[in-house]
Length: 217
Image (cartoon, rainbow, N blue to C red; front, side, top):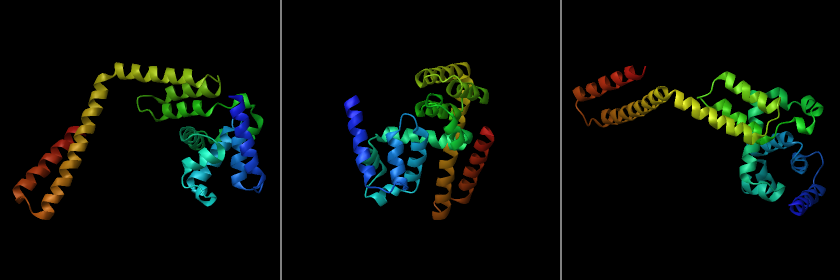
């Protein structure tokens, strides 16, 4: 594993020799070289490459190929980096400011895997705000391993679903009825445009849609 890592670093350094040290492409490679201690910088740089499709300017057909051939990381890892960085930029912008990164020790910056788990906690509708805050403390203050945090997250979600089966059933019912209403409206519109049904039947369909909407209101 050490030999493969060394070879990867040497490949990156060779690419860097032919690039302008002030260019974004050089910066991405430099961030990849220091990946373990500066994943946030790599995530920031990759986000720019992905968002603006800059990899095409560098003769790569896709973002996946660029990551594999230029900086030596898999698509799955690259996407986790993007999601984790974007999550911090949106939800915790103070943690990606240069002054924070400069003052924090490498061990004090949570891994991108931990941030990705925190992102999942934030977006899970079964959890409350206080649940997210607890997971946030686990990641940023206690520095718990992402595997442990992920395990706790899965356990908490399961327990919430078991405690509130009626609420889960209500949501499922409402979601199904909404899809049914959408289908009815689409078919009704087509029937009206093509005049496939008499007006009284169209009126009955409208009445049914109104009753269904009241049912889930």
